[in-house]
Image 1 (cartoon, one colour):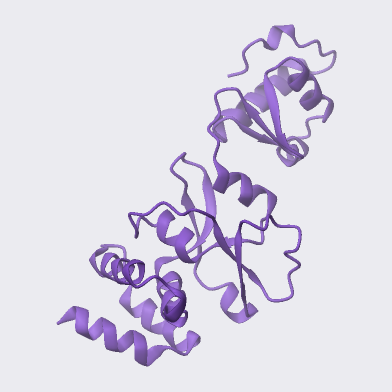
Image 2: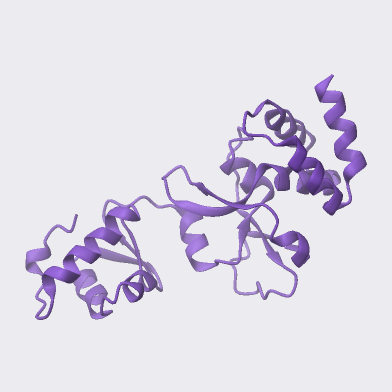
Length: 211
C-alpha cells in the first residue's frame, strides 16, 4: 500500500491513479517500473512525485522500489535484459537442483545479440536461435518474482554439452537431483538431446541411473 499518499499533491484523477499504482506495487512485491506506469496510462510525473516524497526510491533507470521491497537481483536483471534467459548454474539454482548459491548470474542470449552493455560480472552464453527458444519457462525467485529460465531438460542438455567446463560435483548432483525430481520429463530430455546432438551421452547416463 502507498503510505503517505495524502501528502502527494496531484490535481487530476488522483484516486484513479492511486488505485492503479497500488495495484502495480502489490502485484510486483514493491517493485515498480516506468514501463508499468506507461502500460497503465499513468503519467511519469507520478514517479517523480513519489520519489520526492520518499514513497519510492530509484534503483536504476526505469526501476523503482518501495522502502520494504526485497533486493531481488535476478528479477531486476530480467526487467532490464528481457532477452536474457537464466541458464547453467543460475538455472540449477532457480530449479533447486544445487545446494550452492551462485557467485554470479549466468544467462543465455541468441547469437547476434549485442550483450556489450550487460554487466561484465554476469556470465553470458550464446546460443543458436533454433536452440535459444527451446524450453523457456518462468520460475519465481526466492522473493517470489518471476524470471525467465530454461526448464530442467534444457539445463541438463547444456550441462552435458559443456561437461568439460562444469565442476564435476555440480554436474553429478544436478543430474542426480533431476532424476529424483517428480517434475522431470525423460521423453522431453531425449527429444532435446537429439536437437543438441548429444543423444548418445544422455541415453548412456540415464540408462545407468535408471538401473
